[in-house]
Image 1 (cartoon, one colour):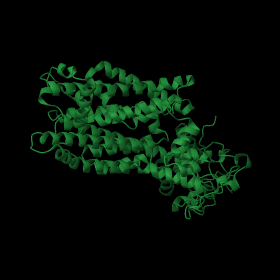
Image 2: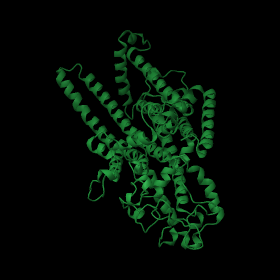
Image 3: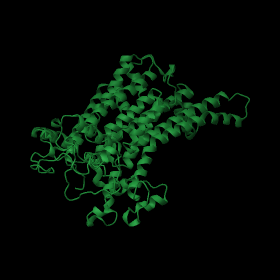
Amino acid sequence: DDVLQFNLRLSSGGDDGISGGDGGRRCFCLEGHACDTTRGGAYEGKRRKTVNRRYHSPVCATSKDSTLDSSTCSTCVPPAFIDSFYRLLLSPLTKWDSARFLSLAVDPAARMPKNIQNTPNEVQSGDDRFADSEQAHAFFPLFPLCIRYVALMLVRIAPSASLPSTFEGVTALSAVIINLICFVSAAISLYETTRLLLLRSLERLKEPEVEKAAFLVASLFCFNPASVFFTASYSESVFAALTFGGHALASRGFLLLAVVPWALATYARSNGTFSSIWIVLQGIGQVVSVAVGQWTASAYADVSTIKKIGRVIKGCLPTMALHIMLAVAVASPVMFHEWRGYQFHCYDDQDTNAILPRNVRPSWCDTAETSSRFSLYEYVQRKHWNVGFLNYYELKQIPNFLLACPVLSLGIMAAYCWIGTSWSRYLWTRNGKDGNKARKSSYLVALMKWAIFALGESAIGESDTIESERNVQEGDTPSVKIGRALNAPYMLVDYAILTGFCMVGATVAHVQVSTRLICSSCPAFYWFLASLCFACRDTMVRRVKIYLIVFNILGIILHPNFLPWT
């Protein structure tokens, strides 16, 4: 009942729109919204700490620009059937979190606390008056900003008669346009990433066969089980386009350039910080590879152990330092967002940084000032949505666990298969075809040696081939080789990230978000599905198709009807 809903103001009778000054015609723009040029917020990028918010009756903006206000421009009012069409098209795409993103896009002041002088007395007590602005902090700014400025651009360049008659309607339309473009971009990036990695691994495979495999991976993404969220006004499409775009750049060896889309992805969703983990793990793999190589090379040299260690450190330190700096750069938007939320709630003015008195600011401001470990984002998630370790383990949440079970199971299976493949390669590399020798040593020691081996293999060079001669058998078909390559050693970091998302989804987050979380973040999820299809052929292809079709249908039915598919 307390779920935020977004009002398009496109009712056929006009009774939910705000009347303008001539004949009760619905006005295009409401006072204080991004389209209100007299307020100065949208076009100049100004932020106002105190905003005269109207809580009882919104008022039409008095914009002098006729293209922004249909109440003063009779030629700007679209035909009635246009609004009916947009209402039918857009209403199902504004549910659940879509309403949050669209509200933030429409109202530039939605992230700021309510002005106490203009807030009704019944919500002035305690921290209740900060609930709206605190909840807004849980939704990162990039996607609402994109929606807002695309909507303003459409208002400027598109024929008014072809757009919805309200700015809210244009905003929802803009979100759909952005998501469709980003969805296509994400599919292309995933295709290109897969193609490059397979070419790097399977040098003997013909280009058409590699393209067939890459096309299957991209097709699995296009029909992924969370597809409804890539069309609705969620940030999944933007996030996937930036994340997969970064992977496409990294697969070409442009890690420095990949930091840019990954940092933008972090400004769209908090789980973009997993790209920082990806960079650090890549750095660790390269450090292990360099350290093992240098130590082995100096094993027979007449050099003291101290000098050997010094050489290893000298060779590894710059690499690790670079990767740590890149990881911090990717995570920095989260730190900026945290600082910005603190400034909005705890300071009186952005220019003078005058701290607000304790009776007019949230109680958590004191905690933030005394503890460097305080996170406003974590606090908001815990306070308003009960997000925390095992907090979601309740009997009433069993249906949500059932919805998340397939994607979590596939993620764990993917990690298990990768570990099994890597362990087999370790035994083969150390002991040839007879791996019994490794089992005679301590199992813990063997695990540590395998971890070093796996990290070293994950850092294999761009021009190296993944398959050694002894691993390629005479009877290997292209499908077998592709299936093996999609679980290749150099994909350690990707499968580790997939495992991390599964753990977060199963233990910390609302479990039903696991599907869209993984589908928008993890290329390894699609690589594993594709490897199953290549390995098991018709039987597995049929099962994968059933899984995707069923969950796409469930999404279409559950999500627009405010049922638990969020």
